[in-house]
Image (tube, rainbow, N blue to C red):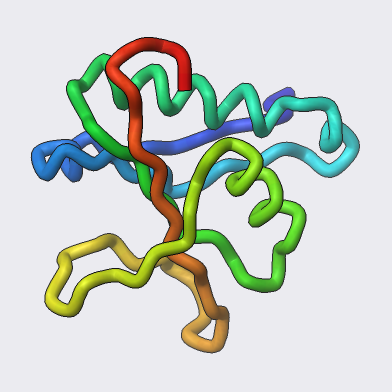
Length: 109
């Protein structure tokens, strides 16, 4: 049984920024640090690709996810006009916060 997953795009790394498209943990396994570990693994992978930053969209109706990402060092940013970022594939009425974290070269973040 799959209890958690994270998905990233490497092709955005050509800009120096990796993109996390999804982090998911089954409900009964939440609050155990699994999502935090998945995000840390994604950061490690992004560094290995040579990325300088990692980004994601966070559903504004999910304060637990926002808190998780902020605790991992992500900051909410405004996407510059004309930027070519992937958009979450969901209902148009769902609002997202675009978040980004600069990555150190070392494994320490």
